[in-house]
Image (cartoon, rainbow, N blue to C red; front, side, top):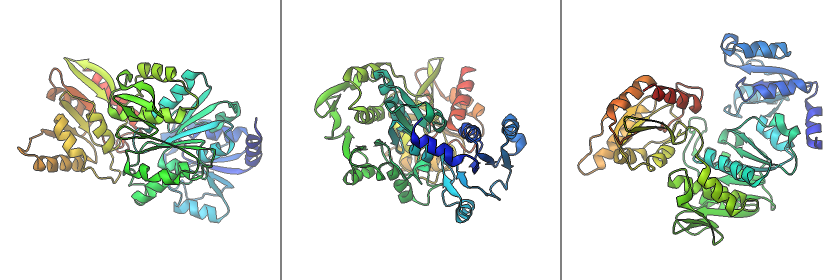
Length: 457
């Protein structure tokens, strides 16, 4: 056990600690705090009935529960762990801070005590695949590697089991980065486009949150940036340590030469060997190669490329029914992700899209839907915005292609509608261009329902 971890254990012993949110990711944290002598209160907007057995378990551990609509009414603690989706300037947090409470998060504490080298990835698109690739490359090379952040398992409770020779690979959202005061050894920003504007005050605040992944780096750290993205290309001048760039359109440290990914001029990977489809995944490989360049061999990169089939819920082939292939890409929670996914297919697409509105523009999605899709099925709060974008694109097209657009209120109806629209050789694609939180707890739940419905066809 490192000195930092011992100090953290000493800090939390007999302290009054409040954890906001009793979701799956926070439950190990609550147990961990109790185990190390903290006096824990757990707050959640859900009722005790809605929480079910976990409420009884936590109570049996001595945890005090504050539940329901007034769950933030009495934040009285020495240390408060906020949930990532909660703004740092929430009035309840500001009041608690004014009374002397320390406001932190599971990820911020993990950065303080983690004994390993940290490689962290953020971006508007591609971060899950890139993070998974980095982890896969390092593990295949033989390193002990831990995966966490937005994916994997909560890592704070696992820090005691980690060694300085290990690697930790993290996917970090703008919410996790917003109040971060430390940066990783290797920081990767895949791209930045408008996203989560329902949670951030404006686009600049969102960009600034993403920049925290690199803001606290030093001369010994590495920053990986995408030169093909306007925002990340501008960040090159702000690198504190070693800068590695990637581009599939021009020259960079990692770039394309006749369909071959090269690193500093050396041939590394033939794009034809990449199992997962799409040029956006070529970019993801470039980012992952840049992040792991000192530690991973060309042979390992080529092996992983030929074997890695992608992350669940990302262009995931579910089933072929009557010659129609059904794909689940529920992870596509922004217009840009759906645009990239649609570009993968040459076949006519029946698209199911829509979900919670994040306050971002949908204008750019219209032309690609009009080009690639034979029918559009909309469900959720962003249906109006997506339909408006398609209709505007149709007005701008010579000939004004007429695309059948259907509205459905539930997923069984949406899948049945898609089946009725599709013919042999077509693709049915779930790619929502929106978050899942209007109907589901997360995109995994949305994707799993789609897969269950398709399996029954």
